[in-house]
Image (tube, rainbow over all chains, first blue to last red; front, side):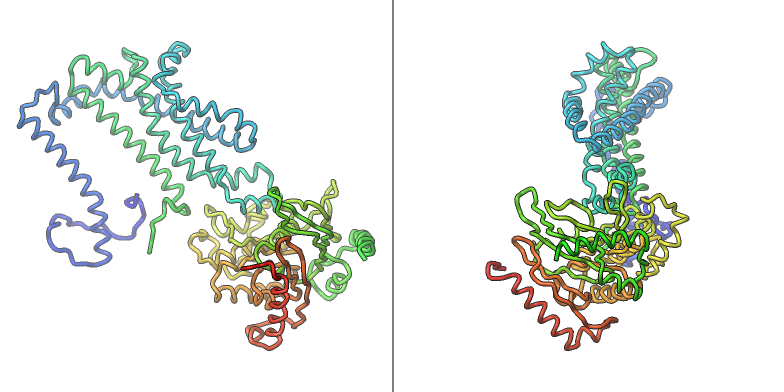
Length: 291
Length: 293
């Protein structure tokens, strides 16, 4: 995350000759370090792709077992029409499920923090929903839900809901007792205590839950589609994966896989960025340690 | 004695409704304060749910303008007294009276209290300004309306320049100042402080001791200050209530008649020394033979 931090140093323009001995300046070191933080992952990626390409070529691996990176890229371009519309479907399910999970998770957490009785009544069912494997419930949901799309949505929601609920509940509960005393002393209403104290206190916990839920929503959207075995024009990336496998169109399978990974990484980066922006002023997790 | 005082309190309550005492500690309020306590504890006991008797049969009058230190070893119930006075947790038995304070419809006292905890107890997500604004905000006073009062409180503790800083950017002493500013912003009649400087280094503590005394002299609130330091209690207060543990109880109630303002030279004076010796002796007597530390 440190790349996102504002640092008042100009970027170094000529990083080309890295093998030259660097003079040891503190300021120079930090820019150099920041450069390395970008360069090392990129270099690693390039290295891995090159290794992959070399392996396929050197050992003459048939493309229906392991396609070369070039073939995968080609497939990504050629099949973009099919893949992009499938990606759109998966994204729609993921984000709708995540949205409902956020509203429901935070809402239920607030409700449970207000009354111990509600918590006792509802929390066990939230746990049961979470611990039962989604693949096992999916067939039932498919029967009950009005359409396949809504069934997928329900599956993704069930999975994404719990981390939000559980983390937000934890955050609401772990409010500093002295601050609670202070609010009581000044005659705060339950609503004021919630808005000015408990919710801000729960924010870091909620954001950690959001990061988990974002990734899980995507996973659940894919897994549920596997379980549903949906097909046709309105289906998502999971169906395209299965279809490619049946047709031994492995380059397209890889292309779909890359799209999925990329989406997952983007969701993670977006939620991390959001977390950083909201917490950078005050929370330990977003602060740079200085000694 | 007790019945006399109670009737006196009842009479005074009638007087106070028709003729309110000025909040500032001028000669008038000091004089009337000597007769009418601000807070009156009688026979207050507190037993915790685990069976520990934190406080046993405490009777004490707190008068307008007093700077009282509750001095005692840990476990003597001095923080418990403070919390009970603040209304955080009810006593198991006994009563607390606020003869001069207003009461709500149900007869519950509405004292103007502020509390300073041992930790600064600031909201880390809010700026210094917003932390100090909090007590007013909870009363529905908008940021604009509160602005001058918040800045005035910050000015008092010398932190006006740090209004937009976050608590994590401040040192321990500065955080405690913010906490004090937050307590002052409501202009309380009585300031309750629970070992506020215990976690600070000595230099900072002396500095804050002096600042607190100056503010107290200037505004004339009543302060109840919990401490386990003999030296701090003698330096600050004009009355020291010595408490003992197991069960928590009052064992000595001594006056410190050294005049204010007290400055650094008071710390090295022989008067200060004598009072410290007396308070120490009282504390040791309080700890008694059955306390093996």
